Length: 264
Image 1 (cartoon, rainbow, N blue to C red):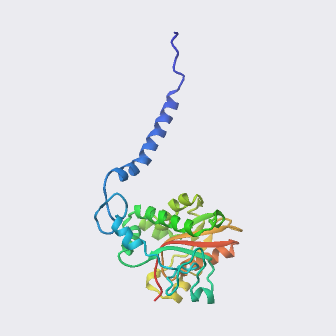
Image 2: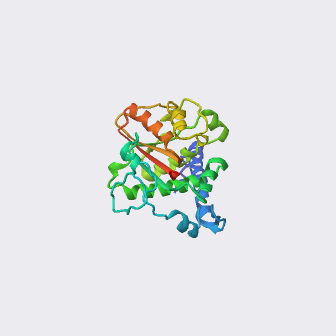
């Protein structure tokens, strides 16, 4: 048999090797996470998941009935199928957004997860929030037409983004969009005014603080936009964003938040 010269070029081989190493690099954390034990993010016990089975059962599966618009907990009502429930505030004065998904109340010890993501760069917690939010939303939707067209994070001011090095809302939005099979866009919304921290203000001051803080950077006319954040407190920031999106022609706005601060 005559000798046949290998026709592949060094450049093609290098490209193939580069693709292989990128694949190994991206898969390696997932392999290690599955094989090696992790520490539960809440109790510190050994766990192959972000939360151990005990903490998962105790703290996440609260099953509280919530307002479908603002996600505030409702008392004295029983959940039935895909019924729509609204709190008195959302009935009397509907906000500019149509729906909100929240995993649980912002309370101990779950608040430690949000704080760990926001201030200690525990980015694996963002994936945990995203996976749970995806399951919550898909369980609530009747069909795929209820999915947003695009997900966008609550934007940070450039100064705060530079200081922190990442936007915790975007860290949730990316894996959430992949899980829901929708588009995500970190630059859809811009914060044009550097506002004071919301945690120090009451509701009226919060609304005034963020009332004109945002702008829409890309066309949204006719779109269903999902806004993603780590914690919803009074809802002033999400109201301001929804109002800005509606003014730009958005058809519908749905919020996805990891934790919700109960009123009062």
